[in-house]
Length: 141
Image 1 (cartoon, rainbow, N blue to C red):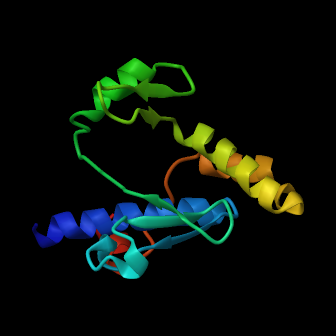
Image 2 (cartoon, rainbow, N blue to C red):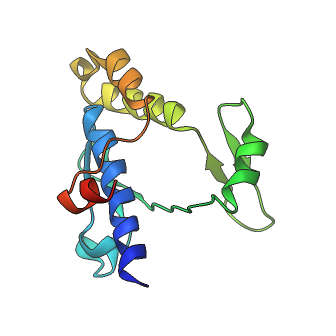
């Protein structure tokens, strides 16, 4: 993998972490994108939405969105897309605003008072990704 590809992946991972933090959800990038299996975790991002055990998330980005367009077309204006293959665990694809709603409800159950600004956080999250968080990415943008 080249430096440009690696940096692009890091920017996307940081954007996902920043988006969740902006919405009041604890999130952390896993060191080296999980290559070291830090704490037994090979994922890109840890999302703490259900207590001490994080949800492990992988982040994928494509410049032209190859492969993503078909999923977006299938999803249409629905809230979720279930992908089912024979003898495999089904996958679920949801838009970011639906994910944030689910995560917000999950964190509310863990912390009943943690939902005070949910509508504002959701509105902020739906405005799109945050600007790059590191100096090099800001100069490139």
